[in-house]
Image (cartoon, rainbow, N blue to C red; front, top):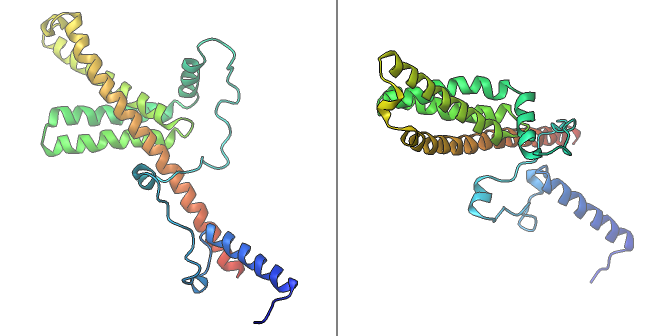
Length: 221
């Protein structure tokens, strides 16, 4: 049986390392993929892990809390207010479209207007998470809550214009008992929609970076 020299062993190990690096980056040419080299193993984690593969942070982004004072009291609350104040358009503009969508879904019921309103509402929450890269879930939650409050304000103003006062809906406890649960539901939907918008943006950046690396590797070869 023929034996290989130390130089051949070293060259073989170097070639194996090269192929492993290319395979991990998805740059291994199709003609080099064989039965003995199936490429990177598929992710067999949890269902959510397969449905939403991990996405790295956005590249070339500064620390949004670099100038934030973490030593003062109530740091978690101030941190969120600080981020919202630093990027107001990320939640103010989507809040307006969220209000229109939520209002349309309430008044439209099961009609086409209601369906369009529902899509517009969720689209606004996802857009807030996409734009608010500093904390996507926070911006989605703020968008949902502000839109919800505007809907209530418009509804109360409309009833007041017709001579219907707040007492027509019961006492303060009855009003709060309706307002707070609905607000909590909208806030939860905003959290999920904002998180998903931020996730989509990170995944898009990851896929684009991998495509550029693959194209660059092909050009070098």
